[in-house]
Image (cartoon, rainbow, N blue to C red; front, side, top):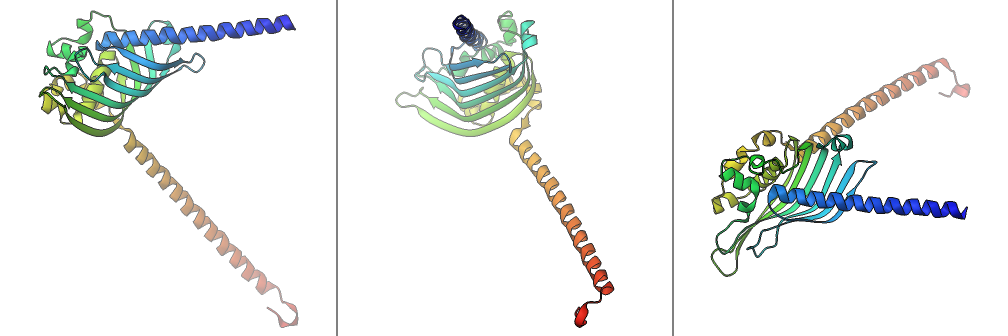
Length: 279
């Protein structure tokens, strides 16, 4: 019995070690993959990969600005949720059935030299040079297929240090909550996030950033956009309509039952003669 217990403890310890090692390996791969795609360094605080339930939970992601910017962080993402297709990944294709990105804050910065941090992104560099990012990188980025993407963006902040002294700051609370379908490469994902973040602001005009050019690279993806809040409201209204209809039908049925019961009682009173002249 003691020997069996030792064996079971050993198996459990090995499983825990393998699970931790798996998470660390995939975490490092994701961070490296993001660096290849964006050109910037990513850091994640918490990373958990499921095998049985095929889920990935990533907490506190931060995409850093390049050197030369006082503000260290470009993107602050408290949470990313991924539901992945394990058989496809085993075959070498990154197939993600569902991705949810919660982007709390997007920081756009112009430094003292007048350089814009957005220009350090590889998708922006490729667009300026008239190339596709995947051609520029010669296939370094992994292939990816995202069936459904839920994107939330809370706030976009613009800081301008180019005039010296304290920076001028503009904040835009865009509160975006949209769903997109069929994203076929990681560069499109990056472009989509930049485009949707800036579309709700005046940053492109303030910085002479070519948002239209970048928008053109993800026009098909933008066309698939669905307002999640609108969808939810429509579903709630439909559910309320259905509930109201059922309530009306139930009320009508109750009224019919009461009417029949009243008629039956009336018939019964007519048929029965109560004693002592009672009614």
